[in-house]
Image 1 (tube, rainbow, N blue to C red):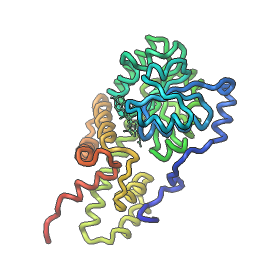
Image 2: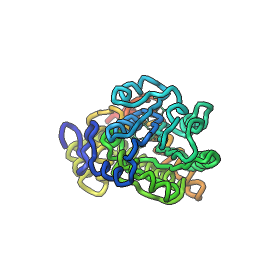
Image 3: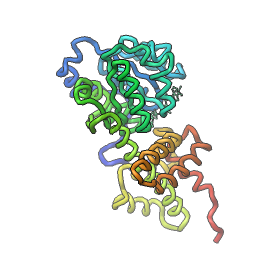
Image 4: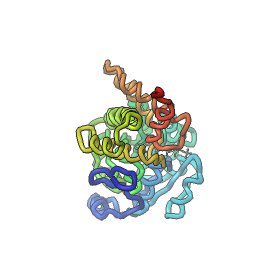
Length: 327
Ligand code: NAP
């Protein structure tokens, strides 16, 4: 533990854009660099801005669009073309990558009148990296197919530092031939393309992933408030837990942030609440009631109301705020 942060094993977040030579070699190997590959990135929040920055750094011809145009300016300075609509960003693109909040935002960026599908040519590849419901991913894939557009669902693991450093991992669903054509794109933004089968399987595994993460983070918050109240030495107790079975990389990272009250956003709580909501629906379709996710979601919804722009580590604050019995 250093400066109130418990470090992640071998995965210390670092910021900034770095050129990954092995990814570049992969792109060249795929023949993608014979002409500059054109990529549109839609959605320049915490994750999309890092992903677009990596594509620029790796030599792609990048167009960007964001609902709040101000967030596009730094990428414009870095060399991207700033487009006035998703359709204009997608015009002439080989790949269009969306990284937006949820199903509603995804619907807007792809399917609205000024959406990307209106600007894409047949044969271009649409990639949605947002964490979406499985049902919406299937609807979107069918809408792409009607237009002769190939579609991949590729939600990511990793957070702000990994997006900025190009070390994300992609959970991809899609046609194997389309995934093969797209590998260089993914390896410019990340370190691993995990091929999970047909469209929808990326979303499915991502929701299972975030169910496990959300429940851990909410229960960690409850455990830390207990440790703070019950008279244990906080540093010693948390260190012992982190060194043992509960010490997952996520628990180690979030325990450090919760203890340091470091709520600079990597992942805002409203998005975790959304993921747990989508997960509950997907699990219910298989007859599995997500009791633990529903309890965790209530925790994230509570903090999202009070601290909408904080990191999900702030999920501990409403629990801290409830006074314990006086002794
Ligand atoms: P974020 O910083 O909150 O950014 C959200 C993005 O979605 C912004 O570009 C926002 O535009 C856009 N957006 C929201 N509603 C919209 C709408 N109705 N129409 C058009 N655009 C809309 O979120 P993020 O952390 O980058 O996350 C993006 C996606 O990645 C989410 O699906 C999230 O669950 C997933 N994810 C996040 C992380 C993480 O650690 N942050 C990790 C893995 C996956 P404005 O800027 O105009 O608001």
